[in-house]
Length: 85
Image (cartoon, rainbow, N blue to C red):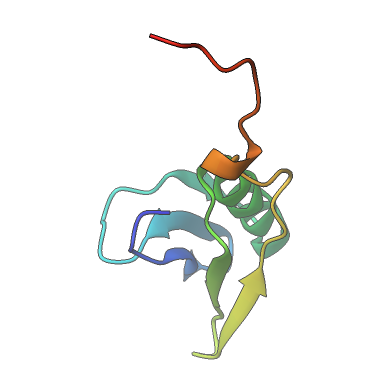
């Protein structure tokens, strides 16, 4: 998770970008909102982003929650033989 919001933003009716909030460089560009949201979900799952901010042409903002493909392991998950120094 980066601390910045992942967002889908319309540049026109036929141009949607996926980017991090405040970053002018898009991660991807698509011709439709559906395609842009698919690209955003792929990126979100890969980088552990839990929410995508979806901006619409009419100014509305929706939140798309992302279910991770897997849970990152924690120290409690690590098991193995104990090694004595």
